[in-house]
Length: 135
View 1: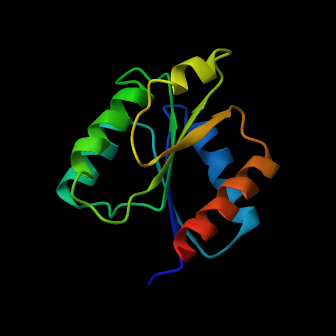
View 2: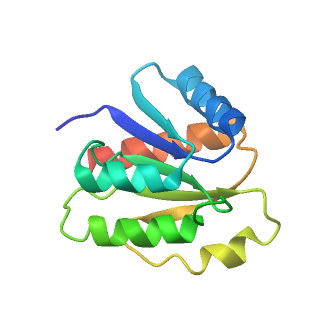
View 3: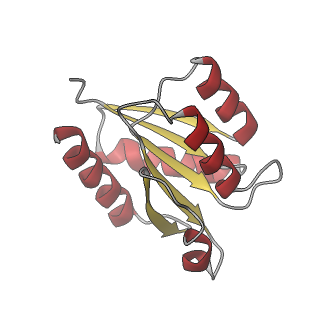
């Protein structure tokens, strides 16, 4: 069992992706972190196996190419026969984030967080990931 947490951050704003990555790095140096500004490239890399299934996926809801829901639903197809499912978190600055989250139906949808992510929320995500890896 690999206890290293791999995290994919999918956000069309490079500064948000960078800041989120830095917050995770400040919590732990034992992380594999990748960022994607283009959700279509993220889906392609997951489909082709160029990117192993991460432990955690943080995905923005509003992106020009596709929504976070479309990313999530694409992953449902990719992961349907995968035994180790990631934790998928929706992140958005939208006020009605909770109503968007109701549309996410899968065994790997883990919740939603308001942007910008705060350090205590990053720690919460890491702690939940460690619990998930241990089980």
